[in-house]
Length: 535
Image (cartoon, rainbow, N blue to C red):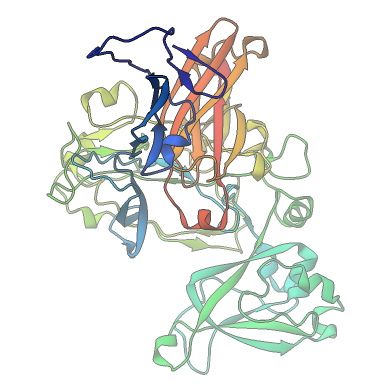
């Protein structure tokens, strides 16, 4: 047989007479090179055999019709771990208990006879900005000076509002948007302080003659009501008894400064001089203090929540290798551990370990009072996890470029490890001296690329291949850490091939029919490659 450029197979034997009742057969090997063929669904024309021969000088054609196949994919179960807002509530412990709702959809028409559930749960995760989830949130500095009468030109304010709320004698503060704009303040809603707001005519003699532009520059100034430039100031009354009235309360707005900017740092520096260790290497601003969320994971033992292999109900996976101070003995009532109250102290300028500002209340932690839990505390290292065959440690990357961070030297609470050639998280450098280094959290250099996957080209998934010449320094890619960030895409398998002068990353992915694809929008994918040795 031979194949021509038109993809027709010509199996015509040499011309000779075929004896009567002769039986012959031909076998063709068919290869599908076009991946779109197997994503087309039912009734795919795979081959169309036609037999032609001459009988008594006449051409005879036998057309038996095409050979059709149906392309079906195994059951594709897509799911997200959605936080149930009705099941997110405080517990007796340093954190929150979160009820997780798992909604699963089968994106293929075939059945799933055996289903293996795999949960990827972050033990540590960056706290992201709500309006831009490509950016990490970082700490702002409380503008303690604004709450002093010599700065706000009105009165000394306190937090929280003192005493009980009385109908005719309520504590309050005043937000002068022009003054706040002059200082470069950012207003933040305090959800634990309900207030009733009222507008007061702004007196130039009392507050100074400032411009509308300053008032309109305040971030979140319009959170509670419309801002009327320099005409009004906003008074916030303590309204903790709002449930006794037929009207709503709103959240108290509190003034903070972004001291990683020149204006915010200049305002902060007028009243409080930060510790030199917090200063940016270039001077003139503070280093960013990135915010993280830590999750301690333990399990229920029930039919609804089967335990992973090797895990008991006493097992707790946590990054916290530094136990909080407690005098509690084994067997004591966990609720007897004293909680740490919050504070808000503009009258105390503070020091390097206790800057002026807010400190949220810490609940007591029932897990810390359980000796069985403390004895079963598992630090997630490769060595420790060998005892749990159903648990794997998975690293991931989060890019800091959109947050404006390009070096560990620009970030607070990280120390440089010369052996690893990267920056390790160590909050004890400023926040609390009892903490040390958390080696799982590090700032490293990665190589990254972004892709858009249009549904017209990747209907149900496919293969993505990245090739790197060894001359670019990717010869040691086999020892690299490769991670993916994807939206509406499921990464199935990734492997690295090293052959000759080229290194190749091959990744297989699947996807379902998501709502935005109905409008022709592409899915997003990021790949991050961290080479060994900190290079």
